[in-house]
Length: 553
Image 1 (cartoon, rainbow, N blue to C red):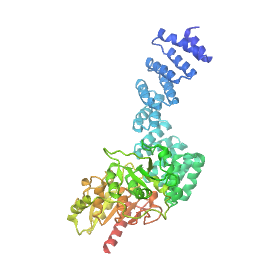
Image 2: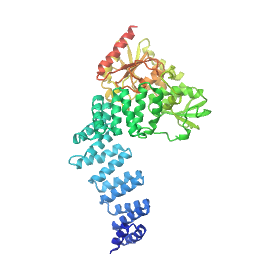
Image 3: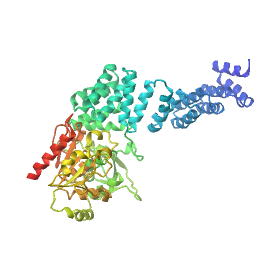
């Protein structure tokens, strides 16, 4: 029996420490051999020393980089040891040495997806599609998922459809396709694929949840609630279903229960991240649990509009004894400070010492907000006196005109922007109206939704002169009316108590509730809802007609 055979026999018999001694002697005798190194790695696994096992298996890969199975074994070992950050460089080296090895490419793609490196993951999946005569359903599904996560939802839908064409009963592809089609304004398609998913797997929580989501897209909240609660029966900690259920309840106006579920959004660690300073025992739970005596840090967690809507709760904290300090987006800091006395926002050269902290959108829960107790007193947002004077002077050339501000798109990364945004051309009847002077409030890039070049004298654009939201607020104070899609502009106008008409998509956000033309959050707002299948041109024409009636009065 050779020493290698002896070591292998000892391994097979579970005599790991003796096997270690044999293989350790062989390594210097066979400096370029793989087998003693692999033997050492497996013996160390047997003794429970995973780190030494990984080190020797890594050395085996160094000696024989074309042995793809060794790289795969090492990758599985690192994954088991929760050393996931090491997987990316390991698999990059492995694929460089074995560029056409499908299992390695699959492992690299999955590792990058797990690290949320979706753009990078598209590279190995593209190579797999080149190598596979017919791409596997997994390759197509994962390609679609990576495209979805990088914002290319049209391309994502195409790959999900390819996966379904390859396997019409591929439940996961139906779930994922339903999850993007509503974002592409195809609510009927989302429903069709959700129904197929739940037919294929009636007790799978993902299939049941996507059916609830599809129903929610049609504002069929009672039916959606049934499916979402069933999904949570099947998988109680299913974060996506928890959030969807909260949105369904809030949309229906059942705020008390809705806030309770909405707090569970933090379970969705893919989309929600606590700030670096977060400590669970310091998160403020309300005055009954944590009486306020001193500083409390309020932190933003989502979009600009969310901050503007929910900063109305800051005076509640002050009333209860809190000295409020805020961490918000830099462009909002000056607006928050101008709006509330004795409030400071974190900025360059400024540090805070606080005991408690609280997420801004948890404040409605902490204060038990119902439809009847929404703090709707406006204005609660303010600009500075200097900015007010500056913009009064800046707007003087249009004195005596009926001045209307327009915004037609939100952020490209907002998941529902395709349903919210209005192409600028559809608003031509507003900015070319002979009896009004329109101003652009579209600070962010509207991309394809700026689909025409408007006459700069009919749609005056002063947004380049905005330095932060105090400029936006001061300019809005000089307008007679703001007409906007659902974006931060709508919230700022409402918080300033300016007359604001908000153009909503058919699946409007929960905060606008159902069927209403008014808003309990913003008394000066009027809601114009676009129906399912209604053309945007017709939607805009209704707004123009309302403007005509307003001008007549």
